[in-house]
Each structure stands twice: as C-alpha cells, then as structure tokens.
Amino acid sequence: MASGFGAGFLQGLGGGMQRRQDRDVRQRELSAMEAMGQSAKPGPQHPQPGMTLPMSGGEIEAITSQGGSAGRANAGIGSGGVRPRSPASTSFDDMVLEGIENPQVRASLESAASTLGMNQRDQRVALQEYMANGGQNLDPAVTAWCAGWVNAALKQGGLEGTGKLTARSFMDWGEAADEPQIGDLAVFSRGDPNGWQGHVGFYKGKDEHGNIRVLGGNQSNSVNVSSYSPDRLLGYRRAPAAPGELSAAAAIDPAPTAPEPAPKPNPAPQTWSHIRKIMTGAGT
Image (cartoon, rainbow, N blue to C red; front, side, top):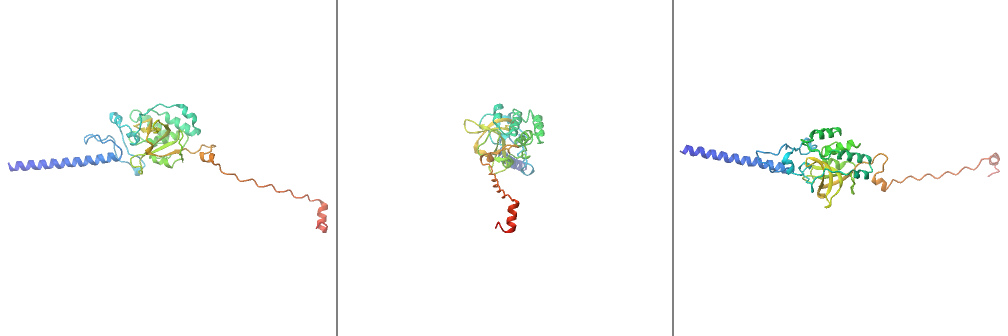
C-alpha cells in the first residue's frame, strides 16, 4: 500500500510539474505574440498559424499568416497591429487622380488602386505577381508585405522606392510633407513608437473624425482603404519632383539668379590724327 501511495504521489508530482512547464511555455508564447501585436486567443494546442520571429536583422517585419475566421476576427492584424478606426473600403474615385500634379505619383496611385480588394489568401498568386512586376519577390501569405506592395506600386508608376520590406524605411524616402496631399505616403509606428516595426500606405485624405485614410496593402491581410489614428503617425513623405517640375520648396522660394554684369563702355575711337598728336606730344 505504501508503494502504491508513493507511486501515486510521484505521478501526481510529475503531473504538476508538467502543468507548470506547460503554463510557462504558454506564457512565453503569449508574451512573444503580444510583443508582435498578435492575438492571444489560441490555446496551447492551437498556436497562432504561421507566427514566427522577425528575420534578417529587422529587414523583414514580423511574419504572419492569417486566414478564415481568425483573420476576420482580428481586423488590423495584417496592418502590423495598427488597427483601422473604421471599416475598410475597396472603392476608389478616379477623380482624385486628376488633382495629382506629379505624373509618376498619379501613375503609382493608379497602379496601387488596381489591386483593391485582393487578399493574401484568395489572391495570393496575383499579389505575388503584382509585387514581382515591381521588383519585390515575396510571398504575402508568409511575409508582412505593406512596404513591398508600396515599393511595387511606386516602381510601376516610374518611381524608385526604398527596396526594403520595412515600413519605416520610407521615413528616409523623398521629402517630408507637413501638409499631406493625395498620393503622399503615410508612415505609422507599430508596437513600440521607438522600435523598428511600422506600416506604410498612400495618403487618401481624412475621415470625419480626423483619422487618416490610407490606401494600403496588408491592411487586415488585403488591399483596401482604411482609417488610422494620427497618434501612430510618424510622418508624411512626398515623392521627388518629376523631371521638369519644381519641388514645393523651390516653387515657394526659388534660388536667386546672379545679376548680369554691367556692359563695358565702348572705347573712344582711335583716329590717325589723334594717334599722331599723342606721338608728338601735342595731345598731352
């Protein structure tokens, strides 16, 4: 009987240790998921699908793959945890293109709008092809793709992006814009405001609450127009001026031009009689 009691005690002790280990593992999983802005709902037997750690020194953002009801329940996860403030829209008014003076920005925004409604699950191959045509080779179902999608849209409009898959890389692109215009880029923080993660898309105005409307990729895992809080805004960036077009700064304060030199006076006519007077001293 004593041996049976001892065996039961050891078995119970082992089970308790295993449960504590499971809780510790689960806590570490939840901490990692929370640090990357992921949902903490799945249990130990159902981990977040496709969740891994960031790769290659921060050049590729947190990698996620969500679909089905999980993707719909976690609106904004695909945008890097920067949650939209209003329902997403896939409508686009072509009239906004007419107000864009830079033809390359206009072409880039038109190219971006052509992918509206595509999502990384149902149009995975189409999105891959679109980004590959813009020089970005990545799988949207595996890699966070907002920056890759922006780079591809810019390339297909005739502009060079950053070539990087980090949204914050666009903070060094173009020139800063205090008063945004349709077609500028809006860059947001994600998680730690001083960290490396972020979100980027095309500025499309503001909604009635002052939130920023963004045409972007990887917004709830798809291409759409969503509103984002200005609290997360890192800055607006404007594309370099097109050839033959003045930049905003040059148009306001053009560089001064050097004054033309004053014309030299014509020398007095040198007649033969005048020269003879000089030579004989008569003219001095």
